[in-house]
Length: 368
Image (cartoon, rainbow, N blue to C red; front, side):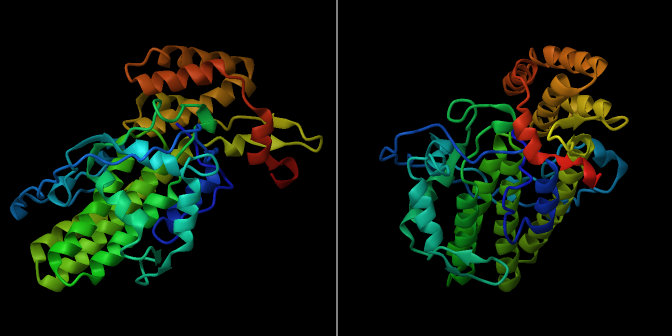
């Protein structure tokens, strides 16, 4: 349910323009986690199934620009099992990735050191770890697990202060696998790396709680799929290239859809700081209805959670009528069938807004 900080550093290369807009418009995720002990955690052995059989005649190109798409969840319409099924490992991959959380993660220094070991990769991939980097190799079996769940067992759900793992690390793992796959002498080895990249992206999107985690997962899937596309063309496998191109075509639509849906509930244009340093809050016409509709009805949990955080601000800083309405909605959502939505609603209902935090995000009145 974390929002994205206006001052968060933009993710390089693949997220580029889409993330810049989103990072500029939402509230903040602090890249910290609870203190955890770094044990010698080893991923259990896992079997990774072969991709599902592709029947080209059944392949459709989703019409994301059609009117009906406005109600679609921001998920791939194409079955990603055709490219890279999830593995069968029984461990929670989040247990390992949480060790690398910035500043307080037990292995945060290992992540920093890995970033220092990067070298230049293919032009469209960016900097990558060496193909035999020990941390890169350690990460591989964790991408063969079935699940990645951070909240609330590993990281707490804490509104706009919800903690996230160091997302630059998995993104760099994926770049590195893609670079290694492109350089592989045989197709089998290359495809194994590309599919691993896609599996990690799918795991990052699986929980559907934090917007930035979802965007990084989407970027990982994009990178891995582009690797498959290029290798398939090189091998003359036009059916696989066609499948990859359809999946690649869905990436931009989901980025754009995320931007549009976040913009509809964004409260940054309602928050100002006056000359005395006091926060002014004035909702734009129709904004509260948009926020409530997203909180109650969005098909994506992360966007429901994002809107619920906004209702916390309305409940604390809106007019009397707006506060009462926000409280009623949050009180109802606190009993939602989705336990993570319900927990987020209880936080927004019961937690006073951190006005000092809002000042960091607000626009000075003289810049209206």
